[in-house]
Image 1 (tube, rainbow, N blue to C red):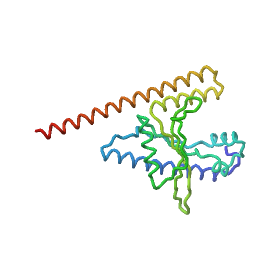
Image 2 (image 1 turned 30 degrees about the vertical axis):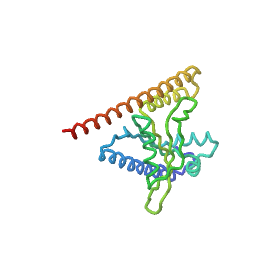
Image 3 (image 1 turned 180 degrees about the vertical axis):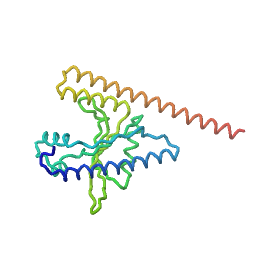
Image 4 (image 1 turned 60 degrees about the vertical axis):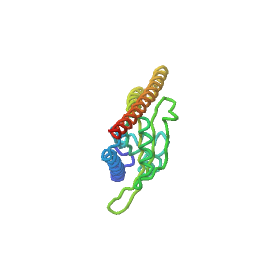
Length: 219
């Protein structure tokens, strides 16, 4: 299984990155409970986590023309540990980004905004690379975790696109790629329209509260 035969080193790598994912989940659960306790609209619909397999790591290192070993995995790959946060609205994405930036137990290293600047395929998502402090029995390790934040619609498109791309191994006919890109545009328009509807509903709620408040004073 392991090309360099250092089974223990690989197991340690996966263990540490698994701990890093758990640290991010603790932070997100804390945010979730804070939103709930304060009676605020909770932007987090659900959370998915992913730990890359050895095969996936080996494939990426080979694509980078690097020898497959633990040292190179740590040096050249920042997405061994991944967390995906699914939101209802685009505004929720940037709200969670702000919340993560202000966390003291992690450090935001890099931000790639594929919502404002989608990939050529049409892919949309906000990617945040964070540095997580993992306490081990005899030392502390800093571990990178890739956090992806996207709407339900973006996640739906990305999931199907990934399955189709995996099936064809990036050799799909050109017209399929074009159709997927058109679907991505539809998804973007849908998110925009749903955001507009939400903002309009929010304005009505504010007016209703102000109206009820005025009536209560008159009484």
